[in-house]
Image (cartoon, rainbow, N blue to C red; front, side):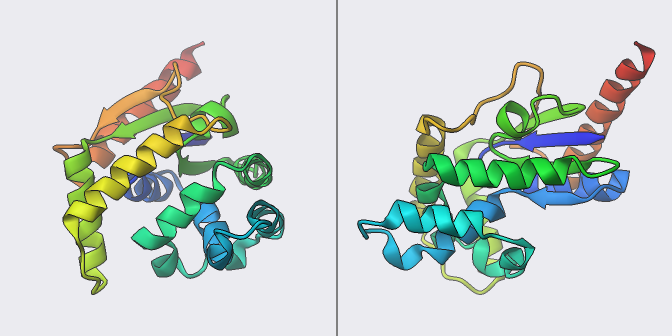
Length: 213
């Protein structure tokens, strides 16, 4: 069973996806970490003439070891780097190959990101699109960062989230939108346990309908 979970930053999709992976006994991939790892690798060359070439090389040579330092990769600063490499076509192609391979492993998987249901796994068994308003997402991300001891400028963080959304939606190589067959789940007023129960109910119902055909 392949479960595709898409949505904007801090919508809750990552925590939700981990919960779904545990619930269904499936491996999980936070695909956003892939772009963050590439972005972090080339962070000192953002203004270099060969920036794109460096980013492409980093993407093509990425392996699971680059994803180990999750605390570093999920920082707000690294998220900015990620959005800059995500608009490069060949980077996306390398990341797509990595993600498709992960999804097609025996038994399936849970993948979360921004274009899983539209680009990476358009034939996923179940697709979820998670959303929440920008203010709620900002507050969630701020609390995550503060829990790690970081000082947070909420005004700046809010605008980073808004700008990230705009870049991702305008990305000519991307697919950041709700797929026509994706189930919408708004988590603005939901805690994680409530959201997880809602997601499980959606998935179980969708799989039951598939089993009847």
